[in-house]
Length: 513
Image (cartoon, rainbow, N blue to C red; front, side, top):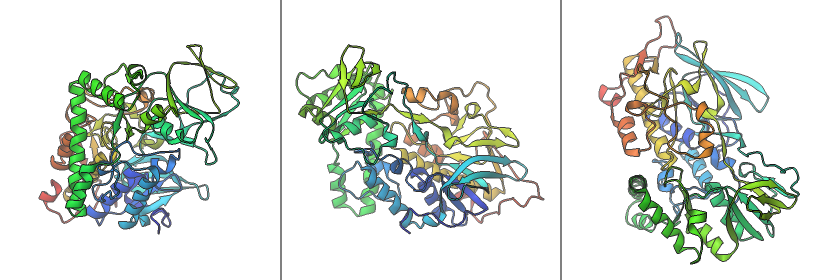
């Protein structure tokens, strides 16, 4: 198999059902396969290809905004010269990870999970899936349900209502649904937005387009950073491949951690540093405060990265420009702004954000009781109160997503080892303190996140209830701290049930390792 093909018939029963075949699903499958070789599992994916984000997004220049020494898996080195991967390179990397670790036989593409019901009596989930190939509905029984679905709706991005959009004579596209036949060569393009997608798109199409304008209501911080990590490449020349990768990963994690911590402790200094870095790549008289000086502090929203200052270079050459203004309406020829100016355009790209969707929109039910996710509190940022035998992968917003995926995979295996060793069938996080919870699932203030706060779980201020944005704290609590915790309720199924898990011949030391 190429690493992207689907396996045969989906099993009727598995120990663990992984929902999603992107970075999170593939990484979790690796941990299960290598650390628990006797565990049966399957990966189901609603789309007809693996890769998640990296297969879905096809707009020009799509790339990572984290270095691949930390965005890559801990078990598979990133071997390219540059640290930031293009979308097709990352997709190839994921396919290789599937192929090298014989994970294709666990993949079941074209299977969308629509609902899952848990029975405490049997200690198992019954999961309902729609199969795209023949429009059939199938069910799978599993002991543990693992969500690796990310956090946004794959069906549609977010586009606000723009008055006059039907009047515009050109083409309007959202980056999440980039047409294969869209050619921007020689055209005037307006990209609405100031986030990572806009910052990526503008320089990618600036060379061919007649002109590209990034139209933003308010600025974002943009960090100019070298595409090639020369220190990392020097380490690669000196050390064997895997040792070099481990070293570069450690260095990358520390750099990201210290940059974030420093920015939060001294936001005024961080603001000045970001402004000065931008100024080095822009004309002397460029109004940096207007177009790249947000009103919020660094890391109140996620920083955008411009590898090798590509966005600033496109502006300096005159191929691109930034307009900070508000939209009044779309017109026949472009966009009318509050300032009275009209931006003429042949193509308008609405890089206006994502539509958020927790855990793939799956309807969860426990013993006949529908689960309201917003009433759930996160436990160690991997489980939910009141939802038995359920875990999820959710990466960092201030660092690389995959760092958390690897930690979550380790913790899932430790938890299953602990349960097997003691004969437990069910584990449920329970919060007995009514004052805990109610905090945001996210630590960012971006509009697209705020719009979805009421559909995501909440978090607490301390203890196991926090959604940490700190790799080192998570590494301790997910890989080192004892699995057992007063907030976890373990139970066995009745003796008559056939769902009781087999006891694994492992030591207490391994269960707590």
